[in-house]
Image (cartoon, rainbow, N blue to C red; front, side, top):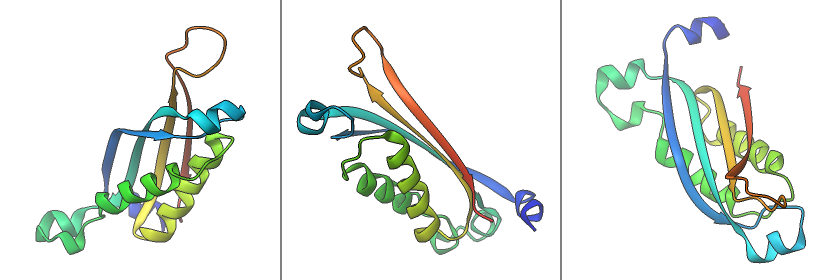
Length: 127
């Protein structure tokens, strides 16, 4: 059944969503905060929406954005925790999606040297 769904898949991407959030293991990170970029890829059946041109038949990328925004506003020590919560919420709020991948990048992480970003990517199939 999962492979049947893959035959009619479309890809919806929300790239480089920017948030100021308070994720990190260090106390200072949870007080001062940091800038984060989030990219989301959703695999969903887009055939009906492609034919009907009706928003009711589409996977809502507004809902997907709202899920990411809500989860980014909840403090976490680990980006893995944030990414897992995003995938859990997507599965609940967008039951028509088949799979999703989320990448969260912390800009200028406090690692003691010049590092542009540290990222965590999680991917999940919803069968």
